[in-house]
Every structure is written in C-alpha cells, then in structure tokens.
Length: 219
Image 1 (cartoon, helix red, strand yellow):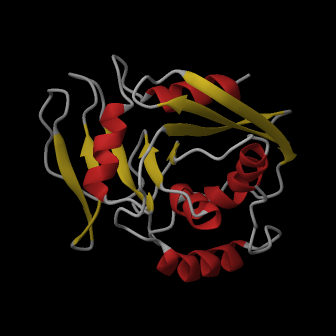
Image 2: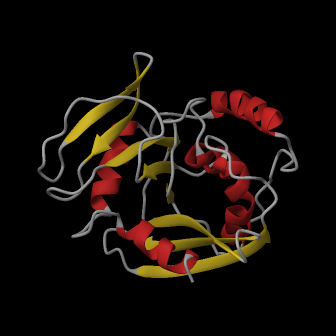
C-alpha cells in the first residue's frame, strides 16, 4: 500500500506549526474500526550523530503479542530537533518503514504524543491522519498538561488536562513505576486507547509493542 505524504517535509518551523494547526482538525477522537488483530509499535532512533533517522515498526498479534512482521527504514535527518515538532523529524522515515510491510497493522502505538500536545497534533495524530490508521500516543514523559496525584497500583489513572480540556490519561502500567501518558492519535476514543495499551502491557512499564520497536530502532 502506498501511503500519501500529503504535504512537503522541507518546511520551516513556522510552516510546520501551520500544518499542525490545519491537520489537527482531521483527527477523529472516537472508535472508527471493526476489529484489531494486529498492533504495531513505532519507534525512531538516530545514527551517525543524528544525521540518519532509523525508524522501526514491529507488528505483533493480539492478544498473543507475538512478533508477526517488522520493517526498518533509514532516511537522512532533514528537520532539526524542536520540541512539539518532532513528527516532522521522524514521520518521513516511519512512513518509509510502514510501506515496507506486506500489510498495514490494525492499530499503531506510537512512542510519543497524540493529542497531548500544544496544538493537539503529536506524532500519533500525524501518523494516524496520514495513514488513516487507528493510532495511540504512548509517551514516556509529559509534554504539557496537569493531573491529580496517581495511586501506585497498576492500572491507576488520572485525566491529563490542558486549559480545562482533557487531552489524555496518565496511566500506571506497573506498580510503583513512573506512569505513561496516553492520548488519542486517530480513529480511537481515549478510554479505548487506554484499554489497548493495557492489553499490550505485560510485566514491564512499556507495552510490548513499544519494547519490540525500540529494540529494532536502537539497532
């Protein structure tokens, strides 16, 4: 399947922000899928002191969480590191990796933000809109927002707020470990997104999708 890029990647920071502000209106924040049999972790690393972007997609079965397929793509890094604009640095290589798969997965779990983003358009939203796949942002740290204290037990959660709006869920995936920040990417509701992250999480802090993709992206 050929994935359409839809917009240029050779843009300035101001142009990237304008694209986010336009494309964020295309994000669908409710469940628009039939069934999920495969889940894919998406992660990105860098080689040659950041000059080369290495993107990995690991496709796992659900509920078995067994590795089915994977793809790795390398691409020259052309956009600088700017917080809030990481998708413009990483997504082109991720799209290359997705296009190397024999079939697209049913759901993407992205190592990064979805709507928990200043313009409600993190990497999970960007990938979701461009591929029209259901996508979830599974971030290891908070970019924006505030939340109430979280209980230590696995499965504890609190809404993540920004400017009075719920933009995600703070989720404890293992007792006593730092939480993850879950947010809608595309074509999935927030509560459903949290449910699928928990389905993909076993005895580690990170879901198995993220762990598999990180191993590939790290070489």
